[in-house]
Length: 143
Image 1: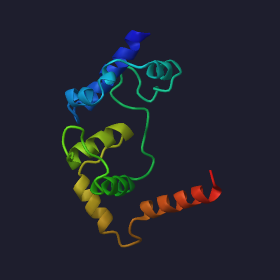
Image 2 (image 1 turned 90 degrees about the vertical axis):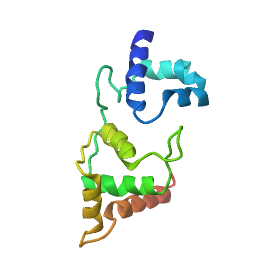
Image 3 (image 1 turned 180 degrees about the horizontal axis):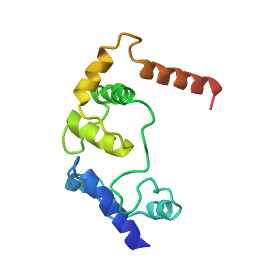
Image 4 (image 1 turned 180 degrees about the vertical axis):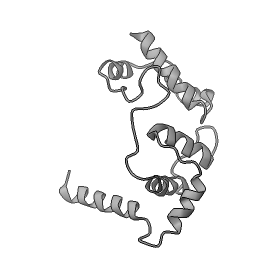
């Protein structure tokens, strides 16, 4: 079973190495190299099933349109909420490359999709407004 877990980690690390230097990760937390008991337990209980063994894709799929994807993640990127471990700011191309892989969505030209979002004749930022309303409703329910 440890061999399967090791294969899973090596597969994930290969993808992550595109965006961060592995050495920087292990310097921050050397325990990343060896799975913890909790990680082994999560693997055994199927919690890591979103990253299937031997597959180059995740089992997560974006369910909204591409403009909503851009609207959300450009906001995250531009707010400087995400940074690389080994450098102060990752590029927009790196950031969206990881997200498109993770959510199984292909956007040919991010800048033209962003421009289409900015040039909308109807309501601006409809997805972000919807998310704010959803969060307000969540808070109102007291969960």
